[in-house]
Length: 604
Image (cartoon, rainbow, N blue to C red; front, side, top):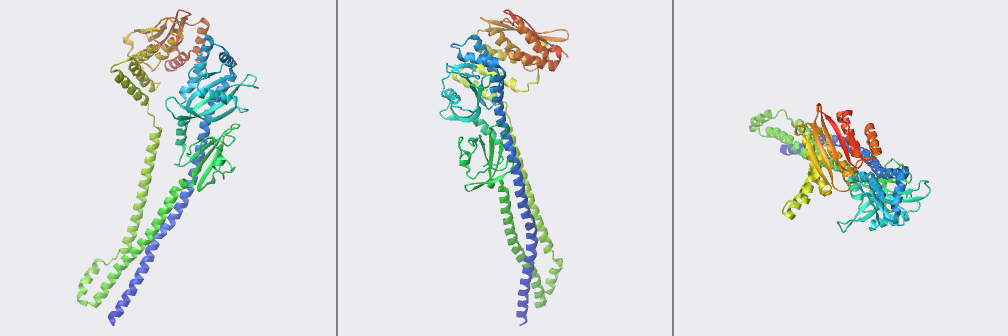
C-alpha cells in the first residue's frame, strides 16, 4: 500500500518536473530567437531594398555615361566637319573626282589621322564610315585611309541607310555584320549622324561610328550586381536597341516584352510583374533630345535571396529549439527524477543509505541548469562565429574575383607575338623575314608597354630604335639607309623613353617617303662640355621655309597641335618638361636637300 502511494507520488513529481523544465528551456531558447529572427529578416529586407536602389541607379548612370561617351565621338566628328568647311570641300571634291588627284589623296591621308587616332585609342570602335552624296558610288573609310568604291554589303547598306533615313538626324541601330574569318555574323552597334551643308538646311551626307557590341556587352555585364538582372536600352520610340536578356532581341518594342509596364516616376524603383516573375524596375532618361532611355529589371527573388535564406534559417532554428527543449527537458527530468528516486530508495532501503549519501555529497551543488545555460550560450556563439567566418570568406572571394576581372595583363600581346614567331620558324624550319619582323615587333611592344615616363640609358633607347628601324626597313624595302654616329661614352647616360623613335619616324614619313629614290638617315650622339648632342639628319625632300617657320612657332609656343608633325611637337613638349626649355628641339632644313633635328641633353 505504501509502495503504491510512493509510486503515484513519484510519477506526479516526474510530470511536474518535465513540464517545468520544458517551459523553462523553451523560454530560454525561443525568446532570443523570436527577438533576433524577425528583426534580422526585416532589417535584411530593408538593407536589400536600399542596396538594390543604390546599385540600380549607379548602373543606370554608368550606362548613360557610357552611351553618352559613344555619342560624344560622333558629336565631335560632326562638329569637326561643320567647323572646318575646308575639310568638307576637300572631301566632297575627292568624292566627285573621276580619278583621285594627288592633292586629294594627301588630304584624305591627313584627315584619316584624326579618325584613326579615335579608332586605335577606343577599344569599342570597330570602324568609321563617311559618305557624301556623289555619282561615283564612293565611300570614305578612315581606318583604311582612303576613299573607295562601294563593294561590300555593309558599305552598300550604309548608303541605303542614308537614303532611307527620312527626317532623322541622329539614330542608332544594331547591325549584323558578316566577318571574313567566320561564317557567323557578329553584332555591331551603329550610331548615325547626318551631315549638312554649310547653310545647315539640306543634308549632304552621313557619318557613322561602328562599335563592337560584344565588347560593350562584356563591359555592361560588369555593371550588374545580380545574376539574372537585365538591362534594356531603348530609343525614343520605345524600341529595344540593346539588352543582355536572352529572351529578347534588338528591334522589339519594350511594351510588348513587358505588357504591364507603365510610365512610372523616374528615379524611383517600382514593382513590375512579368508573367510569374516579380521584378524591381527602374529607368533613367537621357537628357539628349530624342535620346535613349535605360531600364533595369531585377527579379525580386534575386534581391531577397538572402532574406529568404535567413527566414529559412530562422524557421529551422525555431524548430530545432523546440526539439532541443523537449530533449533537454526529458534529460533534466530524468536526472532530477533519478536524484529524487535515489532519495526515495534511501528511505526504502536503509542499508544502502551510506552509499547514496556519499554520492549526494559529490553532486550537492546540482549545477544542471547553470551548465545548460552556458552550453546554449556557447552553442549560439559558435553558430554566430561560423556565420561571421562564412560571410568573411564570401567577401574575400568576391574581392578576389573582382580583382581578377579588373586585372590588366600587359604581356598578353607580347606572349601572342612570341607564339606567332615560333610558328613562323616552325613552318620554314628556320629564321625568315616574317619571324624576324614578329620578333622585332614583340621587342617594340615589350619596350613600349611599360611606363612611358620611365628613364632608360641611351644604349637601351638606341637598341629600341634599331629594332624599330628593322621593322620600317622591312616595310619600306630599299627606300633608305641608316647610319649611326654614336660616341659610346655617351650611352651610359639616362634619357626619357621613346624620345628618338618619333624623330626618326618623322624623317621617314615626311622626308624619305616623299623623296624619289633611296634616302639616308644619320643618327648621331656626341658629348659636348656640359651636355650631350643628339641629332637626326636625313636627305629627304626637306621643309619649305614657310612650313619650317610655322613649325618653329608651334615648337616655341609648345602648343603640340601640329597635325603634320605631331611627333615633333609631342617630343619637344616631353623634352622641355623633363629637362627645361634649353633641351627643346631645334630644326634646320633646306627644301629639296635635307632636314636636321637636334637637341641638347644636359648632363646634370
